[in-house]
Amino acid sequence: MSQLAGIPELGVILAQNSSHDVGVRQVAALSARLAYAMMCFTLVWGVLTATGWVRRTTSRQALRSGHMMLAVMTIAFGSLHGFAFIFVTDIDFGVVKIMVPFAEGGFARHAAGIIGLQLMTAVAISVAVRRWLVYRHWLRFHQLGYLAVGLTVVHAWLGAAANGNLALLQTAGITLVVPVITLTALRFLPPRLLTKVGLVSAEPAVQPVQQDPAAPPNPRAGKVGVSVDNERCQRYGICETAAPEVFQLVEDGRLRYDTSPHAQFATQAKAAARCCPMRAITVQERGVK
Image 1 (cartoon, rainbow, N blue to C red):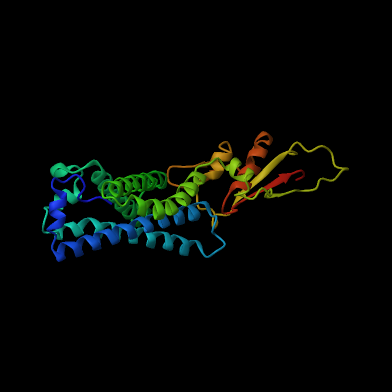
Image 2 (cartoon, one colour):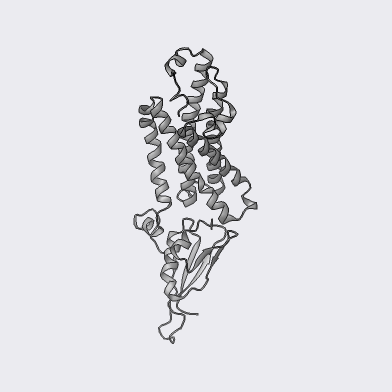
């Protein structure tokens, strides 16, 4: 990540570096690389946790704790990377320049890193106070973490190019970024497409009820009964995407759903049950009373 690119007489400054400044810059460079790696791991783990794709590995609480731990490490290493330059003696990097984008003639790539780290910090703080926030609003704010990652990646790559370290980032950076981009893209793909490519089980979560052939026609035939296990449901909203006429996330974060939707919505309800990553939805066909 860039710190000195674009500074006049950079070659002279580097030639006059004291052993102290060399050590500070090494700390800053190492913490930057660790922050970059932790950031990629945080996003990957967050996507896997949010979609439920690793739910069989351990408990939900352990998954969330792991995600939060990686996020805290990202912020810690990122902060160390930035504030290390306060201790550089051959050039003035004050607290204002490190914390305020474009302050004192800062570069755009510096601003991207500052804003990215500040957004990550704000998102992490919002997790701690989530219980006092409207769930839907908190979820939208939490998604700013994707923007923070994007800004930080821009900061890292532009800084590496400016400082002549692009070859290192091309080797290690692409290795980390490719799975992150892939999983993030999958996070926002339509549930039906996820089912089609096999990332979500296509087995219908339906419990058919046999109808007596001798019984008279039942007006309820073709309808379905819908139930949701509140212990499993994590309110990801994938069911709402698949069947908006049946499932809706309300303002306070609760899931509202029609327990007996019209027959024309039965297919959508079954699709929502198939796409639910937590397998919280059960759809039962109503052939008889």
